[in-house]
Image (cartoon, rainbow over all chains, first blue to last red; front, top):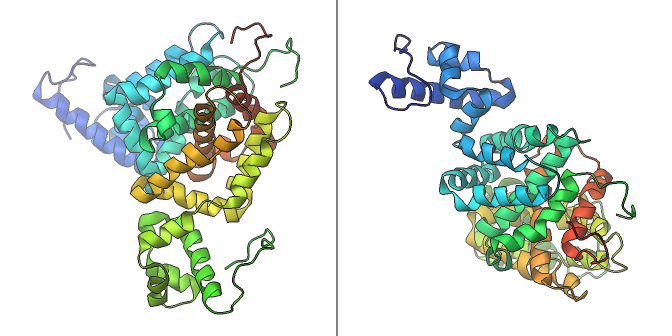
Length: 211
Length: 211
């Protein structure tokens, strides 16, 4: 399509007329491809072919399939970055950091919370959004982060924590359960953090072993 | 239509052959339909067909889809009884008992799971369902049970646990996240139980106090 456009430097938007058009063409192709083939079945190469551009240009714009997917789902890479950041550091208070990151991404920053809420609402009534949310939760959210810690059952732990925290966000934001909606953010962090910690980090064998 | 796996409760109301039986058949059909198709996707006509009655009879009984929905969504007393039962006994393994009761109510027994799923799917698109879910989470689910234990912030704790476990059930059943859907029930109980325990039962001051 606009294959002859001079490649623009990455992460610069609107520098010249061709760039935004090409970027949009890639996004459109990716949206369709993710919609029909799903996350796993979609390749950068195929999206590039659909958009009529070179694969290297897609990489230049979006750096990875993950970020391309995030852009299509309107989930700013910012959200993913923040989850990853929560996993940096020691196990100590990991649960609280993750809960805090969740609340920030889902509630404080409208640029992340609005598209996430939209995807969530869509997932209940729309099969395609459901499929995308499923893959997103399964393969993206927290999985990379926790896997890097080399814990047994990392995927299951990530899925459990993601779904439980999404449930909390929905109870607070969508359903509006008063006791949840009224709770201070740090009250929730203090209450839920240790629980999340228990799922993410296996209990040390040193304790009394009762739980 | 009432061919549920679990035996019917002994207390049968109004044995008169005509009206109550037909009304019950309509409710059963509606419950299944709302649970699978959601509020928007369900029509009076379709429910009537499922129940083997005329649509005008459904209207005669319930006047509108909204009222039919409200009738279906009354939270099964059975579910509340089972949650209360989970709270009986010592604090030991309370979290695991609660998680197990949740899974039973949401997944195993169709008499409880269908109305709950109907309420959940409806809550996204229907204000009445949203209100009912909100009240259910705030006032009914776990609150009485945990309040009986005289714990600080009982309502908040109950709301947090309810919303997180509903999130888990949605991730597993509605969204169908593979790692969650594939997990054995007792694996989930073992992983999530201690986390729920941490929210329901304040950490004893005796431990190192780090978490």
